[in-house]
Length: 285
Image 1 (cartoon, rainbow, N blue to C red):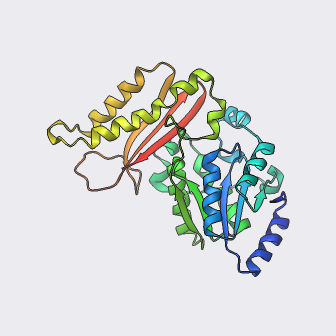
Image 2: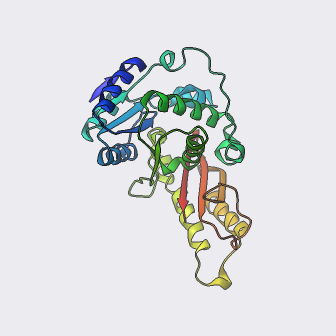
Image 3: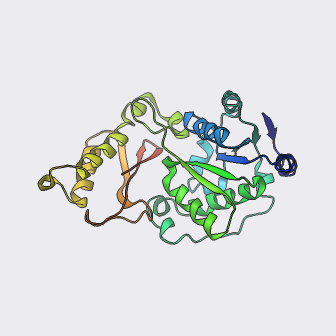
């Protein structure tokens, strides 16, 4: 695996790859890698000749300084993990390399940045979109791979790929879960043993909502508000979990649904705190 810290060096190497007609797949990450990240790299390895991964904890997408400070950084172990899945290239830039000058670029993603994550993490998607645009420009991949767990992030990336005419095929990879259902996340490393024990309840809440939505006995089927209330009651009875939001939304827009009669694919989305650790999860129906 080739490791680069400088943009110019990475660009030069990938230019040589493209000259050999090798396709490039790109997996942007913030490190603290887990099986979910490795699945993205393996997917790239199966579809293109050169799999590129980046590890960069982007400061502009954190609206909580404590979260940025405590975000797990495990570069040595990350490198070992990437080698197990035969990643070809790793890009690990410093802040000065990615932001030689203060960033002033602003994006407007409409309703996408006013609901759920956008509502509770103002500025997050502007910072995320900025760094992903920069990385896309640096790597110039044929394909880019993102995990479904960060569904709203995927939707934002899909939007600016279309708006800015990036010649990139975007791949959304299904959520990779622990055996008890907990969605794999770098933040899971920060959970205490007690918090880790109750964290799978978020997935159980999504399954509860799914079962209520898909109840075959139409006479017993609840409306959306009733389902949301039942899920919140379920989680409210679990000490240690503080729900930030639970939403039943349209998959293609992430706009909250008012009723079950609407003919659309549904996404169940949740965010909650366990202590100071914020976790998100979703389920597509």
